[in-house]
Amino acid sequence: MAKEGSMKMDVENGPMDTDQMDCDSQRQDIVRIVVISDTHGLHDKLRLPRGDVLVHCGDFADRGSVADIRAFRDWFQSQKSRYSDLVVIAGNHDRDLKRPDAIDLRAEFSLPGSTIHFLEDQHLVCAGGRLHIFGASWGTCDSDSFEDLDLTEGNSSNADGIDLLLSHIPPYWPGRTSTVRRGSLSLAKVIFQKRIPICCGGHLHWARGAVRYKARHGCVPQSTWFINAASKFPSSRDPQPDDGGVFPPVVIDYNVQERKVAWVDGFDKFWRKDIPKPFSFAVDRWECS
Ligand SMILES: [Zn+2]
Picture 1 (tube, rainbow, N blue to C red):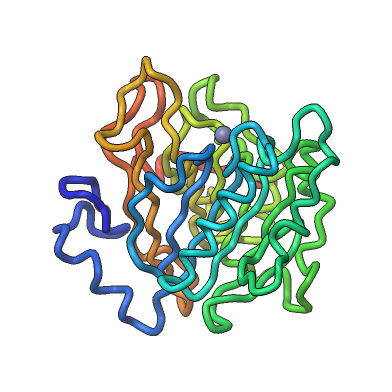
Picture 2 (cartoon, helix red, strand yellow; picture 1 turned 45 degrees about the vertical axis):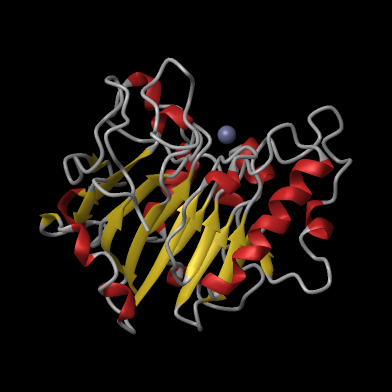
């Protein structure tokens, strides 16, 4: 459960009373997605609410050692009793930085008894068939080659039906400060072309936050949420969370029938002044072509 006093936001109606947090998760049309990223070995300091799907967007390790990776894997698997599905993608720290091919991550997450879905450019249907996730590999992030992806890989479902795209790097955020213009333009294009309602990632720890974009003149008839869920705070010079060196998880209640975010939580007061505030959504517009 999120700590007392953290920001909660109903997408349509603004800040909510904290007591409402559990209500929507009981509805059949709502899938609760708990998102963490960039834990860099601090995963056991997180306090996570229950949900349907637990997602990690990469950089679970810090120096990419086998010991780092296995420690995370075992902790992640231990969360199984609280979620129907556990989903993870890799970031740039989840490998031996001197010998990038030395560790077989797929094998590490495929031990007998493992129920973890480790996605490398693959499409997964989870939450009892209600939620379609596509998880990008670090290779795709590193080469910025999202436009080459086959979004049906691993599943025959229609690529247009993806609800959540996971990518360690965030999409390019148009119209933001110059320091935030470091995301992927090809990722942003794919999200809008395929009308994917949510994209979650991390990587740029200082750009943690959520932005909802709407397209100009209705060329994309739904809004898209970009959520950077980086859990470990950026540096000791920045405002710090109260507990354990990690930010709260991001909690998304997603309406699977309407294919839109109903409610999101997890962004609080810890913001650098030069980074856009969370929930200043619907003010930017994508240049559609
Ligand atoms: Zn990181």
